[in-house]
Image (tube, rainbow, N blue to C red; front, side):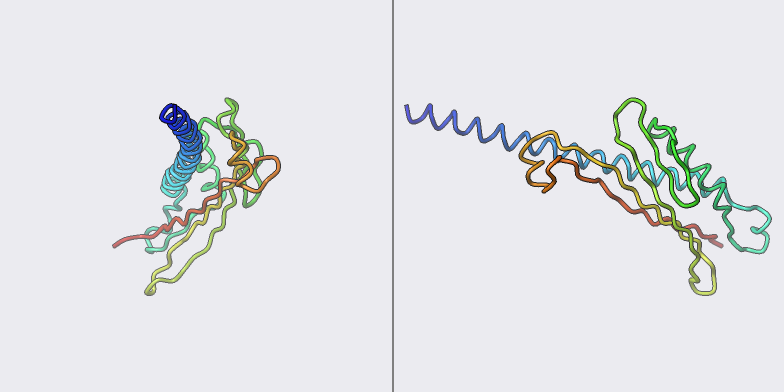
Length: 162
């Protein structure tokens, strides 16, 4: 009788632990997917938005408006999302399929001098709300509604290599 109770207790405890682990792995999977989409879109946009006339002088200039346009096109096709709002330094994407909540991206462009060579840095900050499905993780997140945010930041360096 004690062994049956111990088995039932073990099954209940394992099911609680496995449920939390599966949701945690789901959050990590979404974060990796979003970070990979941002990195891929930065690579595409950096290659397409270079100003070719400046390459002769070995200077690197990126047209920021074109960069953001090419970035949004690549990001939309990568994640199957739609651009719903674009400002000077930020974009908001929505998923028509409901796979993702609204994704907010903020851009910051600046140049840094590395050993007499100018390098352009693009910083992309990502934020999207994530609603936990289990009550235990909602309580652990500290939010009454169970909404937390998946955040990420990518620094993308664009430089000419001789």
